[in-house]
Amino acid sequence: MEKAFIFGVSVSGENFTDRIEETKRIRMNFENGLNTILISPRRIGKTSLVNKVCDSLAKKQENIHTVRMDIYDCRNEYDFYNKFAATILKSTSTKIEQVAETAREFLGRIVPKISISPDPSTEYSISLGIRPKDISPEEILSLPEKIAEKKNMHIVICIDEFQQIGDFPDSVSVQKRLRGVWQHQHHTSYCLYGSKKHMMEKLFQNKRMPFYMFGDTMYLKNIQTEDWIPFICNRFGTKGKKISESLAAEICRTVENHSSYVQQLAWNVMIETEREATAQNLKDAVQKLVAQCSPLFIQQTESLSSYQMNFLKAICSGIHSGFSRQSIMENYNLGSKSNISRLTKSLIDKELIDKTKDGIFLTDPVFRLWIQSEYPL
Ligand SMILES: Nc1ncnc2c1ncn2[C@@H]1O[C@H](COP(=O)(O)OP(=O)(O)OP(=O)(O)O)[C@@H](O)[C@H]1O
Ligand SMILES: [Mg+2]
Image 1: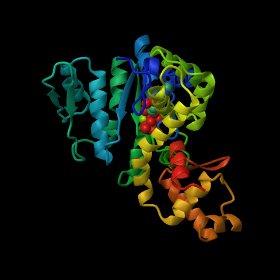
Image 2 (image 1 turned 90 degrees about the vertical axis):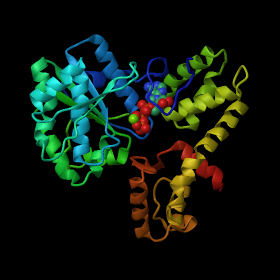
Image 3 (image 1 turned 180 degrees about the vertical axis):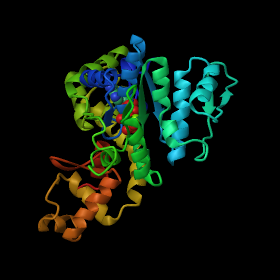
Image 4 (image 1 turned 135 degrees about the vertical axis):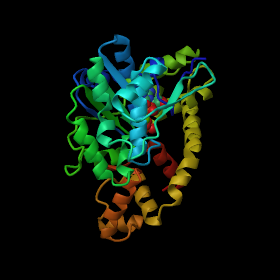
């Protein structure tokens, strides 16, 4: 059944809207062998966007092969190498037999274990079990370049949740190793993205870090209201319902155009709507959205100190700068002046707030609505 709105998972086809400029730019980077770094807050659409570019390139059947992997479950360097090599082997082989052949050719002693699922519709999986004494990191990291050279193609490796690297033991050495090998490759380029904005910025924006200036760094912006309006109205139409353009715009405004929440709130409104959506439908839908998210927010705030909570409340009441002014510190009970920078840093590290050129804001618009309803002024 066709779904009117999708949220929480990556989207494609009819459920993907806009991003024309970004799609073009990433595609150009891929076609020209430039590395791409994609940074945005959570659930804005990084994964969906990269998937879209990869799918469109696959359709064009150019001499570019994209490989996608998600390293959210990698806890250390060798977890990463295993996933890296296994994904590349599998993705560049058209037949199972080729996996073993390519491994023999480029990974020496490593023999892949291939498990074939009993269900014929699902694919096979590969595990390599590489340990530090088996093969050098440099050899593993050269795998895509060797395959690309041999097959006379360009390979683009897309690594999702790349910020995990920042949590590896001895992380900076690992980053140096990766960059050291990758920057000399001519037939392979990389697209690195991840859901923790602050961590990604630490890896790529800090001059002292190995990945500084590694490629074209793109900050993925929110989808604009004028692009959302036709999308929302159209999706209502597919289910025989109606929503006015102004109410669709109100959905966007309520969740600050945050991609996933726009779709979730639009879905909530659609459930409330009999035939044509009303302002009351939206009001009820917002309440339900806040209720749906509240278990997560309770969990996120449980471990916060009262100063941290007070800081969040100050932001929610419209204060975005000048926190160390006497009146603000007293009004919101933020402790001493020196406490302010500690609070800011700790909440940024938790990805709950973000510092922009306009001041400090909550990263999650529904979290803001939740705080406002739990702690009314
Ligand atoms: N181009 C788009 N058009 C419509 N909706 C979108 C688009 N991109 C993202 N979304 C919405 O945002 C949700 C999250 O998308 P996606 O998983 O691609 O984001 P992400 O930035 O990779 O998230 P995370 O930070 O969790 O990794 C989707 O389920 C969908 O509701
Ligand atoms: Mg993602």
